[in-house]
Length: 522
Image (cartoon, rainbow, N blue to C red; front, side, top):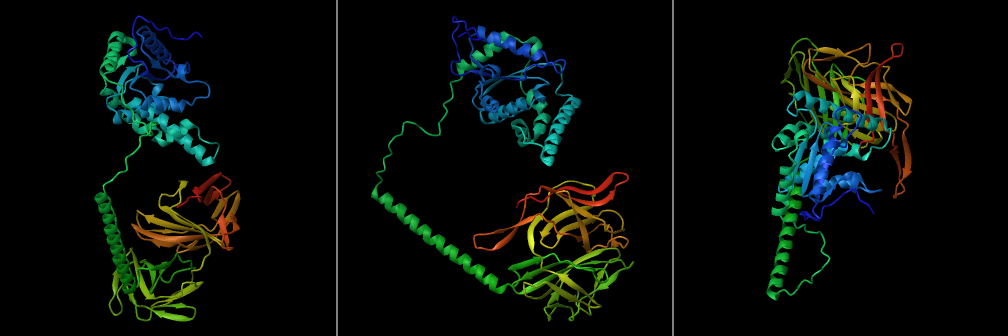
């Protein structure tokens, strides 16, 4: 069979079985100035064949059915010498950049590898505008990847996934100048082939073929297990001593934990509630309730909108009413009457009160304070799924942050933090908000801890408050029976939901949070 290479036998092959690999971008007619690449490589191949130097080339050595990615990894990790012809097309090719990353990584592990570089084309790696142009190119590839991911248009190709795993080569692009400036490369327009070939011959004549250690050796050798008796007894005694020592340590740690649990009433957290209620009392809001083994913590937020410094305090009459029973206050992080805690004008204060332990399975509780109370604090919600720190594709509000989503049987709750970095302001939530999921709308039922339009809630400057938006329940769950014959609810795979805050159909304008991922796993 006739081959595409002519080997001159008068010259001995100095690298038999140790080929030189070529890494380059094939020429293209799509962009003027790229046709020179193939001319440069063809010139080198002709010289290699005249000098009887063995080489490997993708378009010659990749057969039908072979994976290109395998050959690209081979260039990086199996090669001893690589001819890298870098060009503008090279830095814009996903295949070439993947080869480039493999070569860089292998050079870090095997610095004796020989890398011969040739610049092909008229571009300047020290030109900031050129590097920025390459960054814009790969940022567009990144945006295209994210669009495919968001809309689930299709599966990603191998080159797209490789680019994603390597950060779309942005960091490698930024380091191009520092990498190639440290290498004595030639230009394709003036290649000194004699010096080039002498460099390759010198490398192979002075560098022995590396001895790769295989993972498994086919020639298995028998291992002599004859161990002196005294050595065997010493090993057994050492293990017995170690077992006794470890058991003693574990018992000591278990005893210490037991004592801590018996002496400390707040180490065992039984339940954590994010309560839902209609309205606070005089700008006092309950933001959380924690049930411990021997105590109950109620977390409060006070927003001072009185226009002056305000004194707040707790009294011995502060209590929780649960199932008809009263649980009086034990202590508080604010002053107990007659002492008082001063809250500055236009500021917010977070604090807690501690009460005796209440039963863990309650539907609601009431709080009675100094001049009134907060009633109907709902506790029992049948959670189907909770998503903390949900991934959101885009949102139009830089001061609002959705930090928790509860998909419950009777409602869907979005926990929101509001950061006011500017001057004091008033904020309200539109009552026309809705969630969009699987082309179905789920409307707002109520907002807890924040007023709805036309009412408003005062937010001091540089303050943070949290509130809950309660929507109609998402009908996206299904029942299943576990191995204990218990019925459970499970959220089906729905992809994304949108939270629509404002919609102007006449002007085709929509505000809100879009692409909220409710399939995130923790």
